[in-house]
Length: 321
Image (cartoon, rainbow, N blue to C red; front, side, top):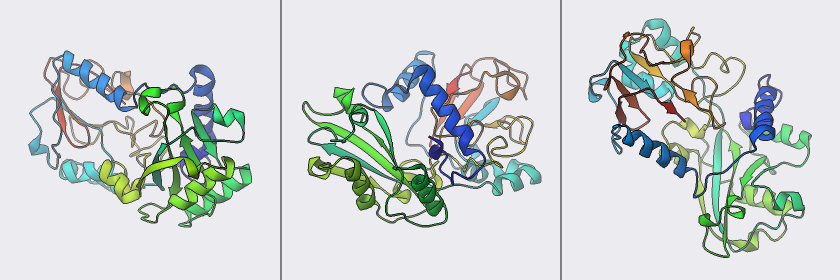
């Protein structure tokens, strides 16, 4: 579980991340949304629109001048994009802090269409929705260290999900889907298809014979899919000891920038990415309540939310995933 930190397991913060994930699993399990995770975004968007909100897509924000007038702007992006959009308004110290922000390893991801379920030799694996393939702790430790050093292990740690086992809407009747990824050096374009599929085959002999089609993404394609994934880093920046609590900068409130009315609320802020967290903008002194801290105002139509590629006028406080 600690390997979700996407860094060497010898780093201090990895045990904390593993503990949080295991605790969540014991308390509530790891539920999956019927029809895919996009259904969660669609549900949130539908509710937001029911409140009178407006969502613009296919609109890449490159300048503050593109955004509507508002009391506050919330950026669901990483420091690199924030600097491009609003860096000229920041204090020298805050700009320097953002420029020093570091990104971690990327991922190589595969989606499969399968003729049948993955034939894991272990029954528990056949019945699991999410699996972590790595054999022994020492093997996982060694492969993650090698990947962080720019190497490519022959038997990488692989995170695999097979949700069609429990959600038949994800595949045609009698067929299945699955996806998996392994960690790779940031910005890597090396094809890791064979290494990942060999690792699955290792624990599920006959798996390759059940592949009908595949779609692969290297780190460049992952970033193209979502510009927040710099170099394929799906955590929004490395979650090591220097960036776990002080992301993206050392400040009393990490969500406030140095510019009045501008806030960052992405996975580049606590508690970080990769864990289905709510970054609640109603969390008292650490975020935004019904009163915008800098402006002292809370009337309608006072908030603009920049989510990667667009801006959203908003008339209430909201939670972002």
